[in-house]
Length: 344
Image: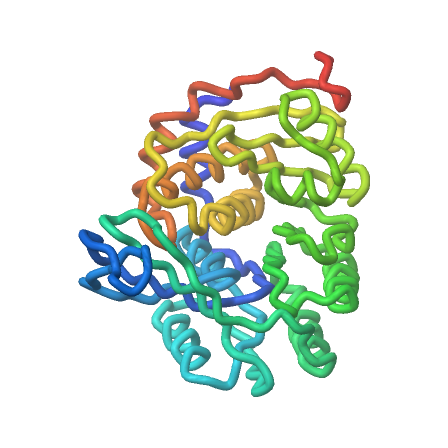
């Protein structure tokens, strides 16, 4: 069992590395207020708005989290040629050390997620987006920029939200470039093109995505562990990390063994952005020399921190250190098991 001293040592070793981020970026707009009455027009609550705020979302939230870890992200993405796209660029420009290759596509809107909160509880969401595939010219330009940057990258995070950027052809080209330059690849997939990410260093679906990809019901420990092992084999990933929400996280490694950790969270206030947090911290830790298992533990701590907060935001290093001190001496709840779910 690794002590929290080792995790703190790893955490202090993170930062200062160039890490690529490729994927769908979006503007997260949050509206906060109080509900104390219903509308006379329909049986719906009326939110008396007290404040609004905008944050970096999607792959841009990964960038935000990498900045919080002290790394120097390089972002490759597409936005609409609109005011929200300009606002996203402005928010990214407020962070020192971020390099961006962001192309404007006048044929599509910038993706916006509008969340409504009443008494700090998430009550509704509206999405403004296009999920049509981006023009081939745009992803080829991004691929060329990635190939130029690749020799200087410690890792690349591919954050797929199925908003049209990561087509099957683009994914294949990204993986080819990463293999050629020996860049570690961490993937957060979505339903479309799920099995296109073959050969990644880390493949990180959540439980719902895994169940849909395999067309099975995942309810008990044995079925979940079998699914994790099967998915790792089918996508030929070195490591498969399966996030289980309130039930924690499973790591299926190249040796075919599965290990589960509990969710390091006290009270869930808002899970939005937790997946971005996990993949960001894993990339930073593994780029600093940590193993996949060590990276999972630190990322699991970070996910617990963000779930206790309201709204999409990065995890502050001090909060992550506090979570490490609280949780990491406990170790995994389950011992390592074989791919069939039996003890090995």
